Each structure stands twice: as C-alpha cells, then as structure tokens.
Image (tube, rainbow, N blue to C red; front, side, top):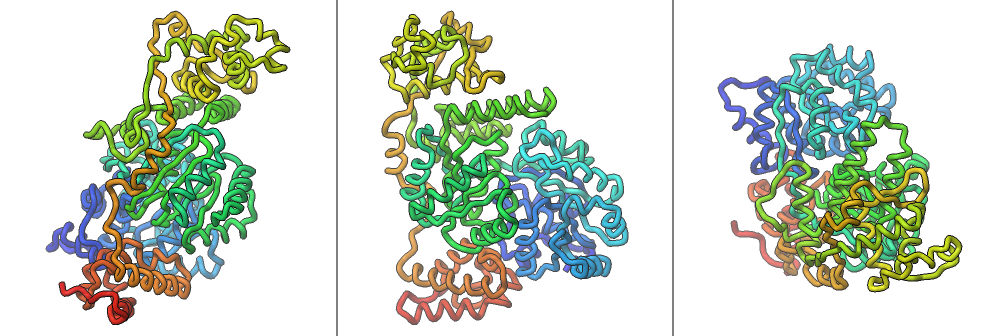
Length: 625
C-alpha cells in the first residue's frame, strides 16, 4: 500500500484521503495532523498523547504515506497481535516479528520485508537490537522507526525496561530514517531522558492534552477494600468489563475469588500463573463481554480493548504516571467510565518501605519518594482531582472544577486541624516514635489495651486527649499528616511513625493545618447522580436496541470465525453509529466513522441486510438521508 511521495499532491490532502479510505475516519483529532505531516516529511519527534488519544495513527499513517515499511518497536506481544489484526482488517500489509513465531514464520516475514511487501512491521525491542535483525533492516527499505511506550527507556519512568536502553542504536545505524517516540505518560524529567536516550534532543515535542474528560476519578477512604470494591461494581458497573489492580499475587487471587463468590465474573492475572492460564485469561477478557480481570501491574499495557468501563485500585500505585497509565485503560472508546481507588495509611507506609528497602541509588529513591508524595497529594486533595492530575503533567485547565470527579460532585469539608495535629504529633513523640497508627489512636481515644498498659502509655498526659474524634476520623487525620510530611514511616522499625523536621512548626503553632473531612453522604451523593454525568449519550430507542443486539451478535460471530477480538472487526462506536443512522445504501454506510474501504467491501452487504431485516421486523425504517 505504501507509495512514493507525489510532489504534486499536498501531504495533508493525501493524509486525509488515506485516513478516510483505510481507517474510515472523517478527520484528525488534536495534534495528530501536525505529527503526521512532520513525520511524513522526514522529521523526528516525541509524541505525548493520552491513552485512547490516537497515538497509533501518528506513525501508521506516515508509514503508509512514505516509501518503505514502518518499523514499530513494542514491548508487548498482545499489543502487536491486536494492532496487526486491526490493520489487516483495514487492508494494510502488517506483520510481527517476535518470539511467538516459528522459524519458518519468521523467515517468511523477513522475506516479505526485503521484498517490499509490508507496510508496517512490529518488532520486540530485544529482537531489534540483535546483529541479525539490524543487518536485516539495513537491507530493507525503511519508512520510519516508531518507538511505542517510550517511557520504558527512562529509569525515571514508571515502567523502566532494560531492553529499551539498546534502542539508542537506531539513531546511530539509521540516521536518515525518521524516528518517532510515543508515550501516554511522562513528566518533564522522563521526557528529557527519552529524548537523550533516543537521540531526539533537537526534535520537536508534540504534547496533547492529558485530559480524559470521559473518566470520572474517585478515591475513597479504605476501610474494607474488598467489600467496598464489590459494592462499587454491583451498584455502579454491573455486567461491565473492568480491571482491578492489586499489589501482590496473593491479593489478586483472593480478590478474584471473592468477586466470583459475589456473582461477578472475575479472573486473575499475574506473573506467577502458568503462561497458558495467563494467555487464556487475557483472551477471555479481550474477547468476551463483561469480564472483570483482577491483576498486578503486569497486566494491561498494550491492551486495546475499548469498552473497559472501570479501572479500580485496591492498592496505591507508585506514582501519578503509573496511576494515569493504569486508569487510562478505561474508556478508550470515549464513553463514560470510572477510575476508582480505595486508599489508606497502610498504602503510604507500604510504598515508602518498598522504596527504602530497594537497592536503587539514593537519587533514584529521592525521585521515587517525590513521585509517591505527588500521588498521595492527589489522593488527599480537597480540590478538583482532574485539575491536580493535569497540573502534574504541566497542563493548566481553564476551569477550577471539572464536574466529573468525586470532589467536584460532592465537595469535602475542610477545617482548621491545628489542635488535632498537635495532639497527634505529641502522642507520637511521647510514646517514643516507635509505634504505628493503631497504637497511637488507642492512646488518643483512651483505649487501655494490653499493649497500651504494657508500655505505660495509659499514664501519659496524651492518654484520652482525643476522645472528641472517633477512630475513623483519627485515621484520616493521621493519614493526612503523613501526606503533608509531618509524620513519616520509620524505615528501621516496621509500621512505626516518627516526627519529621517540619513537625516542629506544627507543634509550635507556626504551621497552619487544614484537614479534609470525609462527609458521610459522599458515596450516596455520587451514586445519586447519573454515573454518566454530563457525558450521557442519547438512550437507544427500542428499534435501535434491537438492531444493536443483532449487530453485536453478528460482530461476535465474525470475530469468532476470524479469531480476532470483536473490536477489531468493528468498534462499539461504529456499531452505535450504524444503529443510530440506519444507513440504507453502501454510500451511507461508508459515511459511518470506522468503516473504511476494506471493511465496506468485506462487510457492507451483510450489514445492510441486518439493517433491512431489523426494519422488516417492525423496529423502524432505514434512514432517508
């Protein structure tokens, strides 16, 4: 499909023509057009776009517009497989070169590359840097190099992968071939390292908005995580596909079992499972409707499933980058979705201990702590979560409130917490800074447990001085003081909390303290509002619903026969568009976004027959437009 540039045709016109004919899309989004024109003209660049923002088109289109084959570096077999399946459905000559191929299959892909029979080739990073693969590429006609998930090259990124380091050889061996690095998550430090390692320091950076307005961000106080999760799914997302992230393999197994027992279709995914089980569970999640996968962070990157309606965290991620990347797997189709997290003091203590006990250099630990502190600030903020999230990536929203996070929908109360903080810090100090949260709360509320009496803490002046607050309120106050940096986990004493240098100002009354209160009605307030917020789409009419059901059943059958995920055949948005417009001719069907030339050729007549049959059964008449 790739052809030599035509000097008489404007690049923008050619790009739009291919965008329409191959991908069935009417136009570009955001910075896509600028990136496509730049790379097609032979330029290098770094692209930052949110998940679902259309990064793939930024290299797929230039590869089709330039002479030769586009080489896409990806760390994930699942991503390669799904993208190649989708491209093939659209009539693009695409292939993979990774460890899943037999020797004969790999030889055939290499032959096609040398023969100029490929438009796009997906290669794993560890394979690309081998002498054999580099020699192969030097014999081929290369249109461009696209380094996907480029944050993996940075030690400051949330998902550093050593195999990415060797990709610096691309700039050295192929200096005349344009290079495009792409990622959905990178702060300023990470961007700088990506540019340095991939030889892009002089290349422009195209940074799209990180905002995902269709995602509702919610963070709740953790008191019984599994029970809270079950209630969240049953009340807010029954029957929806979702991802639940846990920190440990054991917790993944326990949570999946608990959800299954509660009648929710849930499957586990972690590196400790047999490869065949992992593969089977991933395939179920991708190909079936309404599956909830409970996973460690080993799952998800490169999964293109567009209809994930929620991402839930039962444990605190390591950074805002990780949180953003993981929550971004919800709502790739642009429809309303939820990012929900249950969070508590133990999460902060656990993450800080993991950093302290890591073998990383001190500079790496300092950056890791700074990133964790930024995430904790997001969890504790009384303001708009989306605004704080976007500001972390250097973006300043125009509005003070987004209207689609828990704090905007049900604003928490804030009060002067100076006296509360002083009582808590004094208690930690007078008990020797050797005890954890539960012990400090027992002393404050005057609970004379055996442990409190053992250490004589029932005789201290701070014993019982905090009876005006209950245990939940003290936990919230303690967590916030840790988040503010006035208390810190002791790396030498598991679970213990000690005062920091900044605590002195609080005890002296010099440092103002505002504490966020969790209102009792927060959960109900959010549930009482439509979970779709202002993004609610027009409800399907009865006829539309009948046609939608037939279209989905048809799509599932086609996907089963072709051995691909249903969304590779047609995305939900395309199915919805067909059901809404009810086209009566191939020309009208071609105008539905997502219907390119090849899909019209393959499926046009069948789709029109379905629409006609639905009309004949009394569910409305086809569109006259």
